[in-house]
Image (cartoon, rainbow, N blue to C red; front, top):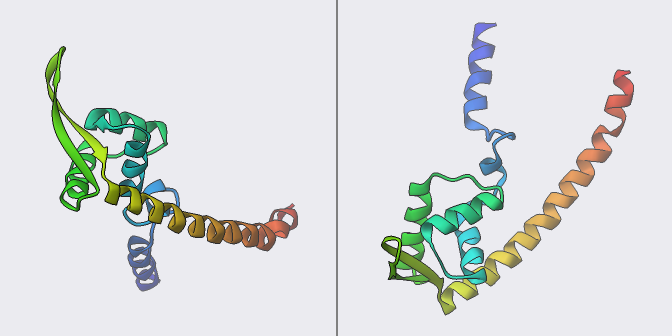
Length: 136
């Protein structure tokens, strides 16, 4: 009995947790979100973090800034320091033409994922439709 419990615990550690919104997102989805937000308007990191939260994404600030620096190294975004009247200078980020291309590629990939997720949810609904009725 104990061995079966240990095996189940090991399996659960390897599985994505369905309640964790990050596990349900495509790999590197933060990159796509940042590209989209920068397409809407160039911005500095703190404002991007706030806008990510408006989208429902709560990410560690360090992860967001590291991702922005990665996107810049890859040529998807560019940055420049802007003077601030009310404090220290801020690094502002903007999308590059290559970033525009990648944003379009992300959109197409996500459209495909949305179709697949829609199919999954439809099948799930059909498969579980009678389950709650049988439990009564």
